[in-house]
Every structure is written in structure tokens, then in C-alpha cells.
Length: 211
Image (tube, rainbow, N blue to C red; front, side, top):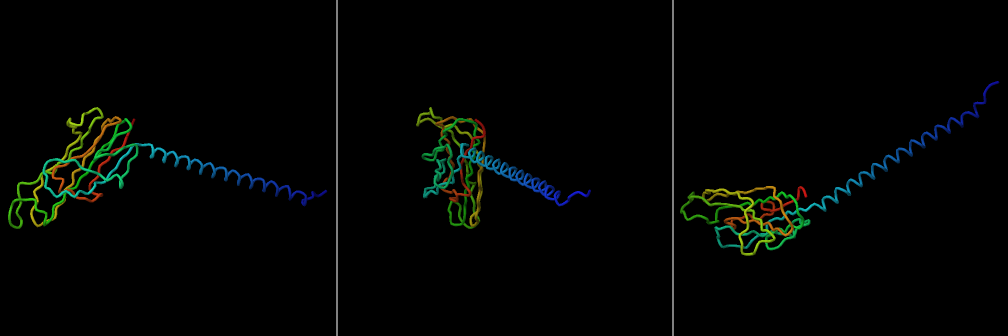
């Protein structure tokens, strides 16, 4: 007796349909799990970035015209910078959370024809040089307003520039320091009237690398 193949075909098709459906469901489950995992990773990274104390402030252009040689405190622009778990007041970055921080500062100075810095005379004349020094200070919460603030870092150079030329010199430094809530950080430079006012050239910041 010959088997009824007409009855077997639907069963075979049914098995194929079930296999395809199961494979599709498994694929959808894997995709959903992958997307969920990526979303959670993104949210965790975003939360970590938002919770990490960090500050980056570009320089605030000064209208200073007086040619002061001694070191003067610089001011920064918090409206165009970034402050997360930091405060800012009168040129000072204010620490809000304890930890080990990387602190950095960069300042650019420029000289060009028409900017009279030398006492020499005649084209091409130059003097003994100008000192461009950058200091990064730390002011402890417990310090009195009249006491001097410790210098955390110092860098600089003496530049001899010839008249009639355009020159630029940048001072940059960074280091790791332990900070506490209430500590204040600030930068001072000599010959601040020669500072380049561009935000891309002069900036100051810090970020926590460990608690």
C-alpha cells in the first residue's frame, strides 16, 4: 500500500514553519538584548561623565593696558567653559569633592610689530629679553585671605624678540595633586598684558582621576 504523501507534506511544512519562527524569535531576542546592553552601557558612561568632577575654562579677555611685569592673577570665562562639581569665583576654581586631581594650565603670549615692549631703538633692535612665567597656586580652605598661597607648579622662559616681527610663546604645565573640598586653584603670570586673548590658546582646568 502506497503512503499518502498528500498527508505528509503539511506536517513537513509545519516543522519548517516552526523552525523559522523559533529562529526569528531567537534573533529578535538577541537584538533586543544587545540594544538594551548598549543602552545601559551608554547610560552608565553618561552618568559617569556627569558625576566626574571636571573643570575647563578658557581665558577671559582683559582690557588691561598697563604694562605690569610682576605676576598677576588671571580670570577665566565660566560661561564658555565647563564646570562639573566645581565652583568658580574671582579667577579661582573651587574644589567641591575630595580626591586626586590632574591640574593643567596653558597661557600664550604674543608680540607683534606695533606692540612696544623694548627700550631699544631702530628696526631689528632687541633688549635682554622678557620673562614669561606661569604659576599655578593652591589656596587651602583653612588659609587666611592675607596668607600667601603655595605654588603647585611653575614654568616659564626668557624670550628675546626682534622688532618688526610677529612672535608667540606658550607656557604649558600639568601635574597630579590631592585636593579637598574648599580648596581653590588659580593661575598667575608675569607680563599678563601680553597674553593672547584667544580661548583656544589660553585655558585652565582640572579633573579627578581617583577618589
